[in-house]
Length: 159
Length: 302
Image (cartoon, rainbow over all chains, first blue to last red; front, side, top):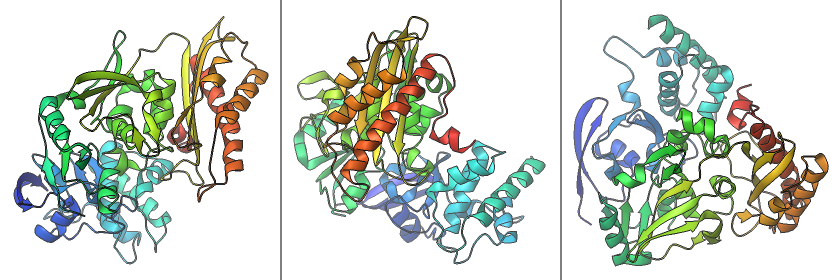
């Protein structure tokens, strides 16, 4: 099948690519465009390692065809930090050692950013519920939840 | 994943022509959270995938007292539960929408896709049944309406003709003194598939002391979601009491035909039908009396 031309925005930059209809957004992000921060875990919507936002809505990029990105705006983990430094969520993950192997981390960071955009003052329960679609198989969740709680405070203080 | 042709029509007319041309060799893509997994797992290997999300009609989400609630087939769960008016009027539907997968899944997954996937364990189907939802279908021979209670015909099977597409779900406006509630049993708090799911809707009379109408529907206890009509109808005209609720639970149990599988043995599932009919009727009654009843997400948040 011939490739399809897709025009989209990734991390606020206009981007275009060619893809086969059967390629997922995850595959195109990683293999065509080089956004390897987004990870492939289960590839069926259970683990959240491939989390990105699509027009501000948190999704699994393995469960979307790349062709569906036409005209949409996507944010990946590469869009979190800016030239001045890490995003407060990334800084909090570092300080709380909220990662070990790091495979799940980009998904957690993107999901946590989407949470704070939606709810700047989440309770511990709200964080645990929001992050239920992200699995970590080494650190456990307590450090991650504490990091998000602290990042929320930092973001609020700087708002 | 087998290669396929991707089409993203902008009108229903184009979508129907694309579907009718290929029949069973075409699959409709709404949120994709089931379809893409099925394509990858080779459960389906269509020649053509028709993405309906660029069609205005399937993105409609609206409420008016006269027309009721319209949920387009491409509207994801998050749009439904983030609409304050709809969440206030239809908490029984939100109970379902808020527990499908996790936040990422709810960002894509649709009521329409959940219905057309026609899984016996679908969380939205019992709630659509108790809310008397009707499917607006369109096909080569025009439009037709099918009540959700008549839609599913077997696991993954439904009444859609090869050229037909679900456009939207239409749910009647809420009458006074009405309440609905959905609960499912899963071994964890989220990200799981129902061992059993139950939705109940009641309309109360006589200052909330009597059932005027009741509708009960069950998930994951038969080859399709089950509308337990007799269990609800028997409540009409009865006083609200523990005995009446227990009788409805027993009637619903007698309509369940569960199998034993990795999610639970048949006996346990039948037991759960009784427990969840009781709990969802109590929740629906409380909501009909104007009381707040937390859904699973609100309950977890304390």
